[in-house]
Image 1 (cartoon, rainbow, N blue to C red):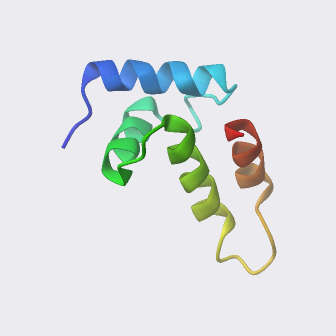
Image 2: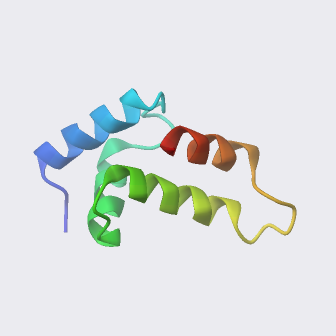
Length: 73
C-alpha cells in the first residue's frame, strides 16, 4: 500500500530535521517502510533500518549505518 501524501511530507520533514539527505533515503520509501514495519515513530523506523544495515557484515557496523543510527538517537 502506498503512503499518503501527508505521510510522505511527515517523513521528509523528519529526515531533514535529522540532517539526512533525501537523496540517501527517499521520503516516499521511508514512509512506506514506516507503514510496513508498523513502528510507532519515524525514529523507531530509522533505528530499524540502521540496525539492518549494520548487521550481517562480520566486520562491525558500516560507517554510513552508524551515522544513521547516531542521527536517529
